[in-house]
Length: 56
Image 1 (tube, one colour):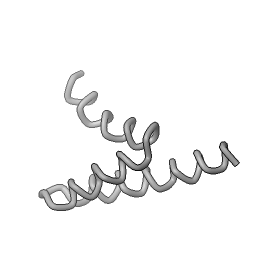
Image 2: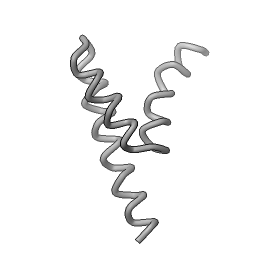
Image 3: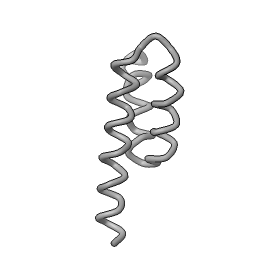
Image 4: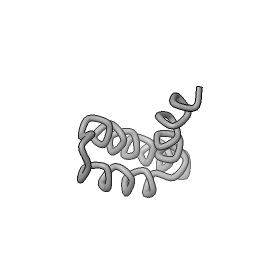
């Protein structure tokens, strides 16, 4: 169960705090797992759009 939580945790951060998720995604791009990093960046950008729509 902890492996699943470790995989979901960065995405939860990206949804709650999009700038932090974007930073995590950019940092992950320098490592081996590019697919997860790109997904994290996309989730962060989509979450930022949702937050913007909710606040405006």
